[in-house]
Image (tube, rainbow, N blue to C red; front, side):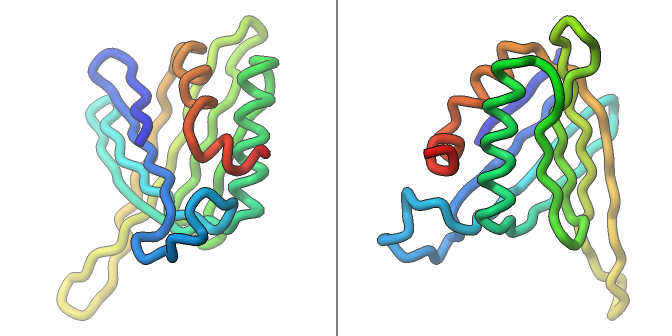
Amino acid sequence: MFKFTNQDDYLEININYFDNEPAENIGKPIDMSVDINFYINGFAGKGGAYIVAEQMKTFANDVIELEKSRQGMAYLIHVADEINFEIKSIDSIGHLGIICKVIEYDYLGTEQLPLKASAFMEISPEQLVEFAKEWWVTVFTT
């Protein structure tokens, strides 16, 4: 799990193998489970989704490129829009921000209701450097 912070605000992103993943798949670039939890400017949200390996590979390579250049973006979007996570440059001198949207589902009786939350948070470049060192980045960029 990686935790981005900005004063009292935080965003946690947990990228992992599925709980029941066979041992022979650990360490390989396969589909992953992604969970996001945040509290930003008084708004909270959480959500999770399964992301296919090809998207994870693109995201990992974009994170590396963004960390090197401090320009552009790295994004992770679930096909059914359950999570949208984007790290992007917000100016020409290297400031960075995260835009995050999540949808979690709950029930009211038999009716399924989507609970949507979104937020934006500025992060320091040092946090991106540390995020680019996460274990899953190595798995998907080798």
